[in-house]
Length: 604
Image 1 (cartoon, helix red, strand yellow):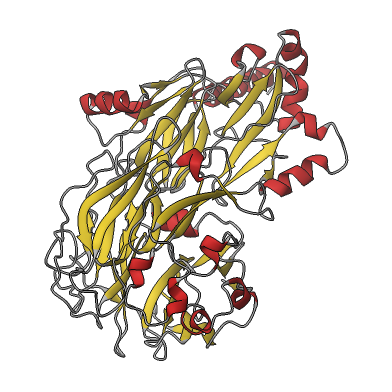
Image 2 (tube, rainbow, N blue to C red):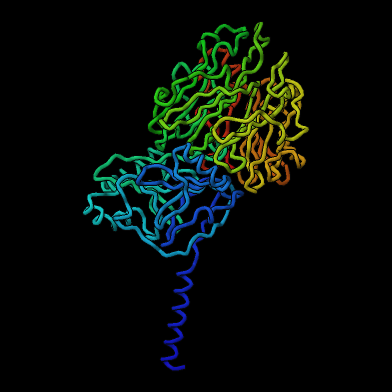
């Protein structure tokens, strides 16, 4: 073959390769939960066409940087319903994602979604307005390199990059870069990142990644994007990959340990705020020990606390978030999810009622449930629901990928005439009306054979977790006493029915027969249980495939470390309130208590 022919062949091959590259489609590889993506094509993305699969896509969001508001889409709504819903929330209806725009996708299942043809567009000064910009590009630069490349043109336009942010989905943390901190040299930027619990943003983004750029006119203050709320209360409590934390140390909290606390970005400032509820005196009206009564206020109440860093003291910020602080008589659990579909965390308090037996004359068991719903003004509305039960546990999840969560509650039979909402005194479901209110309690989707029996043989707790990786939440129920423990997984049939298949019966530790908490990670189930007299606790690790198990932690008696001092020295608390760890979670590939006072870390 002569030189001319070789040249022609090479030219033909190059042309074909360039043609294939130009026409190659971008693939968005989604993980369950929030994914921050970008459009690197010169063509817009048709949202309804690209993200039409409601079994995989919960919602899609884009930031309107001109109007400073969100545009929203969900495949689970009709066009008319979507327009009505978006208008009611102050959103735009999201129909298209332009070239170089970033966007969020809340995925219900892992998926590979085909996007438009890749064009390799890059950012210019004109793409960035002052304020927040959610962008995507094929620059393939680190934030430092991007800032260097754009600095001259941005400066000529009187603008400058203040901060750059990317979302790390596996750890649910922000990656952060600030040019003004980086130019100070030394460890200034690294120290700031560490103090805030962020991750360093030092690597170039992939072509499909989206990222935030905050543009100012000079040395503007660092502003942090909100932490996204996850699609289940379990994930919001146990999959945030946050270090164990302390509880507030003010007198109001200190003497009466609480089961009803949770963390989320309630202030929408990129920091975790704590919501906490304590019972009033009436919750324990018939306890004989007079000392405990002096530590309860006359009325229960809800409070919010914030802190600057993980080592800072908690500061009461209730007044900035909540006007009506009325709480339950006794809240057993605080579950965080998005109940009104605005992308912000809300709180459902699982309320139990009076826990002092026998009940005072004229007092009925149980109480009405309560929810805190986020409002456009940044505060929360305290809503008392028309649902009464002696509910001990509960869980919430976006079962239909709708962007708003449904709730499962465990209602305990009590030894008294009981005005139960269902007259079932068993686990039941509250289906969301798409606005944070709920339809009448129902047991239609739950296993027909799940009965609580009596007070001494009840389901105490529930969690909604995807155990089999099909993108659907399954139901775990735990509880019982009197020597027989119950720990059961009811798989979702794909239509949010939990009673079609026979349950997976998990083993229970024979010495601590009351399963009360669960963590799931890498095919292993960790179940925490304590004894009928509340003096012993164990955590067992279960292989979900073989159901074999090992005990990875056990404890008997009072925790004689900082917890005893923390909760006060009165013998009543030492013997009755400080003999078990309430909640466990995952942190840095370890199982740890949520509270930092318990210095326990168990490898996965």
